Length: 261
Image (cartoon, rainbow, N blue to C red):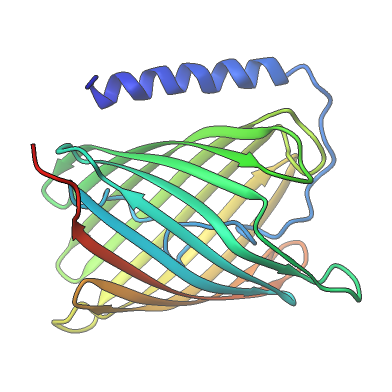
């Protein structure tokens, strides 16, 4: 197997090649989709978890999301088949129930996100993860997206600060698939007891198609034997049209399911 760093280098070259091909196209109209709305992510918080799951392990996430009359069931499957600190994830909404007018439309989600997490640095309480990522739309939107996330994290005692800095570019631009999208997510966690119960507070900033939006969140993480329950409330698009979002999600690590070599 080639080094994960070589894989990342090849992926980044592909990303910029795709972006360069689409750069000459016209600037699309700003998207009206709420910040981080109706798109599956890791956990309920604005950020995804920077550390990859344990080597040879399998992890699943199943949740419920409510946003301005719309309902979603976000799902994530993460696998780490190698001995290295690398995992692969697929994200999709199993159920996408929206109410654009008076008629509700319920169907399988139309977006698949693919993410590769690679831990590149760990020193004392600091951890840095790099994550190439891409998205494919199965209906309604042409093209896809490609980019990457840098995810630093620092912990000391009962406190943890984590952030995600994500940039993606469109492969085939349209009003629903803007040419460039930047997201900055920040979360603070405070452990409350020996079991690992914690609360979190977060802030998000997004710049897409020339439009900036911001959001805030708060929630609770309740651990159990091989996973955790996450509960979150967030207020999105604070500077445009404030909307409330509620999420709850169960994350389960099924342990080492890949054979040792």
